[in-house]
Length: 324
Image 1 (tube, rainbow, N blue to C red):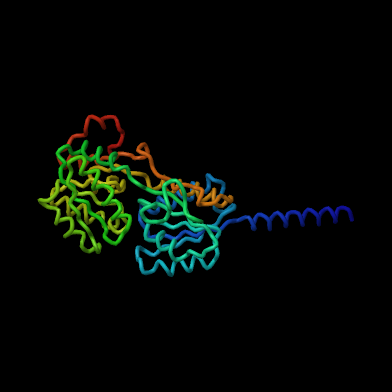
Image 2 (spheres, rainbow, N blue to C red):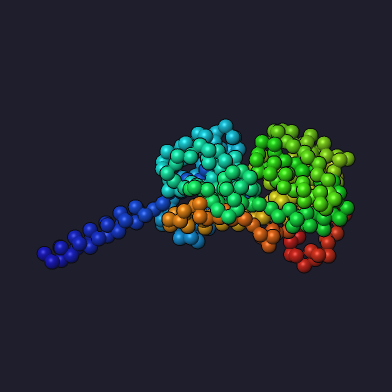
């Protein structure tokens, strides 16, 4: 009988542990903007940061992940569907999704972590860079445009006119334009505003910079990144250099150079923040993560450099940043 009681006790204890472990599993809803290498890297970085913070998929966290394939009209439906499951936390990917989530899910009971936002303060996702909003904080890919333009001018000393290709329907894109203009002006660089309303316009918008700019800078925005190959092909026919902050454009030899903040790093920072929130910290007490100048990484396309007849600046001789 003692053996039977001992067996029953052990079985009951094991069952209790199983129930306890199941009860501790957190559900994280991932509201995506669309499939793209940079955003995929963001989500991968988020999961890595969350794991580093103590929440690993298959152990104590599960994900409910979806996206709207860059269709803004589908965002409300996606948010409602994800919110209906009452997740422990939602992570919103990119500015369009994050801004609508902040508006639409005001009465939610769960916290939201955003990433990778160009400027969460400008987008009204956080009251300042020093604190989060009630039940909402996250990470950014806010660029230090002095660092970016230092690099652009090192690559192209004759740069005097820069066409900024931006998405007029993306807040993060227009923020980038407004952020770079005053810094460029101080450096004697004229910004040629080149707005895109629809991806089908990309060839003609790039062509419109001919004779008006020395180089073109495609802003890191979802729909513009989708059209990177079109931008590169059009610029190449025009013999117009492409300088960017999108690393994948250099990796795929679509741009000659990039000074970029890693989207994966931004996602990783958001994952660490999410882990803190899941452990009980109040999001409003967690400042949004902002990249420092040291977090910016130069990249140069060897083939594009040769095609343009440029030489690598002496300051980058030992950078290890040239991709062949």
